[in-house]
Image (tube, rainbow, N blue to C red; front, side, top):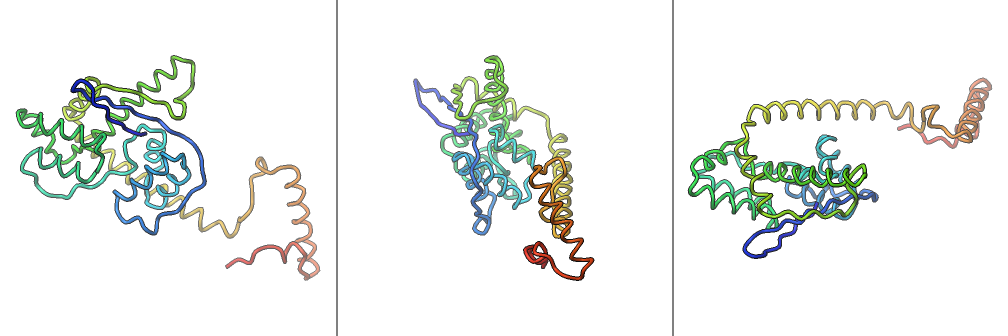
Length: 265
């Protein structure tokens, strides 16, 4: 999703673009060292329609499938959270500025962040909410992004469409966006966040355990397909290979198919 800012009559207007598409993956894993670099690469892939690239990045950096697909469809602001240094902040302004610096998004994060900075100066309750460890500007942007996505999806359904079309734009005014921002910070979600984080850790571990298990069994089953997935022509070829292998084993000689098979390492 792309965010654009337009200044008009002293108000802010946000234009959110929902993108989709498929292209082959391009690996950048060797040069990605930080969460910020991972987000930058994932955002570039998403904006260029390279969703396979996003998935490859997510897999390489142990990002859950659910989180990855939310980012791809445009209902999540960034692929992963950028960790803010574990330290005490004197006030909301200090924390928000640190978060804005980490996110480096002048067209969206900075606008929301500065709005909160100005408001928190005279609102002690908001200042206290922003300072809570589980409250993050990036999560706030996720919350706003999800709200915008839901509006776009509802609009698509009213038109009889199953989902949001690629390159669909959604213009939102500050009067719509800023209440969502305050709604996020007013939300009592500390317990919910903690539970989600624990569930996410377990889910990611399970996903990767499953991947590792499948990887270990690949050499034994390499190149095989389920019967329902095999084309009749392929089935005939596989049967011919099977018969030829059986004959070669019975005679103690290698068949042509045996010589053509890649050697297992």
